[in-house]
Length: 439
Image (cartoon, rainbow, N blue to C red; front, top):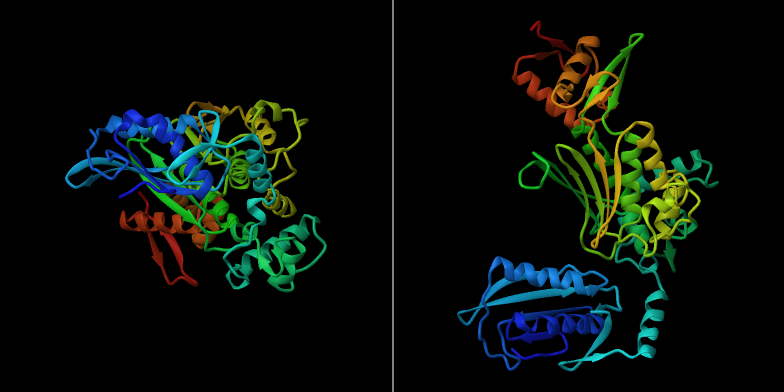
């Protein structure tokens, strides 16, 4: 083991500051590399005391002193019987800075980057957006059903004036092809197989110690949006209100605000960051996170009035979502979330994090229109039972649409109700009906 342009060796974490500089130098030259603590620069294994605090200290120092942020893998390893720490890192968002300075790797040394070299690096970086890069996917990877649906909705919104003919023609008109090849923006918008994901979970309390359910959604942006929204609808509290024989379901968090937050989360995320979007449902709040830093020099409150201009991280994606009316207008997302929540008296916070951006909705456990949310709220199973009593022939699909959850979730609840003998099915899927027990 010898130091190289992509490998740095440090005797111990006493050289942590120098290690940070080496990581940045390697990233600026090769965009990936490795570093070991507990190994001399000639390859001699000397070992390193490794505790949970050691790993945490390395992680925090990297997070606090490297810009833009990176998310390395840090693990304890055994080399020749010695405890060492292995740090594996990567990142394409050059130039990177350590303690406010930029460095580049030359052989096994870290050299400061001159102002002229730094200017060239920045110009090269800004020459092409991530969205404009050519994707490894082909036209055959495009989900035509998603694309057809997009064209139909965009026509309905009167924001395009052409119909679906074939995938190539439509994507070309949308500016998502270059020399007949898919751009990366087209990949995340219309290809099911891509690297993007949303992690969703329900936690038992107000922290992440115990989770009740966890899911991982994958697919194109439109699929991720649909899956995330259905998951939230299924796991927040609803109450039923009957007025003039019309049943109205009222959520503890406005669905319009949830949808807007999810769309913004997927539209403005940093797609070069391998970390995915997150939906976290706690006992007292719902968090929607995206790995995209809020623009420097701005605060979310600046956008409450609607006068501040939008700052687009992904203009190709934003424009496509605008055409289908998934985005009402550029730069209005935060204002719309804020206004809807204010109208419904639901507290919402917008938090700038070092690793991204977070929207936090308080769950409405108090009293709303004289009815309590929380433990006394109707659960999905009770809503399904009430619908069956009202209409024995109702389908699972119809129940899903009325309640606002996925059909799969309805079918799961139906199976539980049947097992508990609270309902039974008479006849087959077609022509049959449900019967609820008298108790």
